[in-house]
Image (cartoon, rainbow, N blue to C red):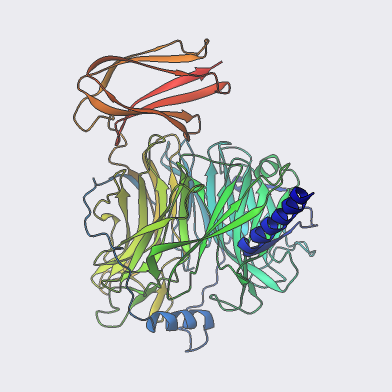
Length: 636
């Protein structure tokens, strides 16, 4: 009897402790609206007036509440210090600029809000605040250029609750390598009555052909808010759309209500079915709403069924806090829950100052708005997350880039980071994975840049597997400043796009910002979209060991594995340390089988496949820095 009482008391104490540890809360709303598809074929739309409205009058002091408050925080920042944060040496190899395209033409709308995606067969979608642009690399031709307005024409206005009236803005696009399809999203309307989220799923791998188009409610809670500032990502099963909501009449971050996100079954969208959705809201940590959540894309491909999202104190003058959000399961047929983990880093981030431009007419102050510290891009690979965002540079007070890491997600709370800087202002970064095996963590970081003697342009850093960075590589430079809004501060764009070319490991494509010439005399320009293909320095190289020795004369038997044992005979020229990793077909490490000092000459490696499920695997042989061999393992 005493044992039972003690067990009950222990259970009560355990439940109370767990409740105390869980210092976050959230709600999930299942919309009653049945989101059904409308089919649109953009290649058949023959009338497109491409309407835009851009306010070009300089704002009166105090009228842009949100921006004014943010600017005040930037100007009143105490001295920003974070020990050991700044990268001082840039000794990694330089990436290669392969191809570039001048994409969407300026259509009198700022900021650009660039994003892009590329398919395995070379079809590119580039989006800006007004236009969808499709380019075929195989024929070097533009196959579609259509406004967001015209793309949505088939949805309304209908006069009912899904009436599609209001301006179209904040487009995002991605490519799904599992389905060989595209997903596009943009927002409609900036009041609770007109706010909609337009989501399109391509029906084929041709983005100029038919799409399934949906109009989600921008105010699903019916709480007088509207949806703004989206990010999107997919995993194996679902599409995630993160949103900031604002009260009516608010703009530029004033009137913030809360950050929310949607989880949507992507197969419903591809098939044109009624969407299965969940809407996560009232996401709080220690009783306060999180501000801005960014879903984390897969590095070498999709992952799941879980999905990670990141958040931080994006508008704090300086902070060391990050939040890792995990949705545990798929929305259709699963039982997803949201788990939030607060993580601290010793590498702080600070509000970025406005970026400098070439002075107007040689003398007038000219700046680019850099917004805040929100996380702008992230990928998940090898049980770790890499992410990027704007930050203040401690040594110079210029705008720089914070490159962060959350390593070994299941076993540690550690967050680390590096601050990348230059004599120019660099900002609005994105990041894509360039590794060629599951043991590699290299990446390319793209960004916009400008300065008092350098026009608006864009460039990249390469991050290698040894934790080194390449020197800043200029991709597109101009000699012009951007002058559209008429005030001292221009909009630089709220993000840039970046994507791995999934069937070409080591290759990424990204879209950035440069200034298109209006007047050589005054150096005045307008914003332009520039798309580039960038190759990792190791993209075309043959993996070799650091001492020049290679694994030779490889024989595998039996393969497929019939007797629950895999054997590999190989020869090395000199004695070396080797690691043998077993990797699944998605590129994720299952286990380190053995780490051993291997003698020169012929060697035999064996391991049991008895505990492996039927399927295809890979055996990676690594010398600590480089993958020397990648052998396929088949279990029947």
